[in-house]
Structures are given as C-alpha cells and as structure tokens.
Length: 104
Image (cartoon, rainbow, N blue to C red; front, top):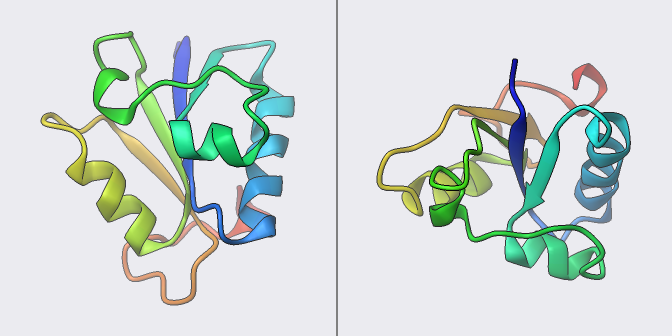
C-alpha cells in the first residue's frame, strides 16, 4: 500500500489547482502528500511541499501530475530515477497523458 505521494501541477489553470485540492481532500487521511514547491506556492503554501528531486529519498512512491504533456516531461526531467507517475490531463493535446479529469 502506498504511504506517500507527490503532486505536481500546472499552475496557470485554475481547474488544475482545483483538481489538486480535490486530490488532497480525498487522500490526506490515507497517505502523506507532498506538493512540488511551485504547486504549493500557488495554493497559498498551506500544504507540505518538497522539491521533486528529493521526493524519492523522502519515501514518496508515486507522483500525480496534474497538467498536460509538458507537466509530465518537466517532472520526469527533474528526477534522476523517475518515480511511477499518474498523469491527469488538464492540458490541450494529451499525447502522453490520457487520464481525463472526470476519470481521475
């Protein structure tokens, strides 16, 4: 069972940040959640944050990426050994990301 997750989001779309808040509300009693610093900043720094490249060492087992292909690629590029990633498409194209918000 997963005990720690990381969440990364695009922050130029209000809908993406709302999705992050729904994820936190749904899972905060079941797992420890760490947001990327920029995601936390755009949510008013009211949640725990951690740099993406430190998440593996802190025991994060899964990253949820809320955005589009660019969010996924930027997230993966910050990790030497990428963690498993679940991506929710809040972007426009979605070549890499095929989970739609209503399916998340």
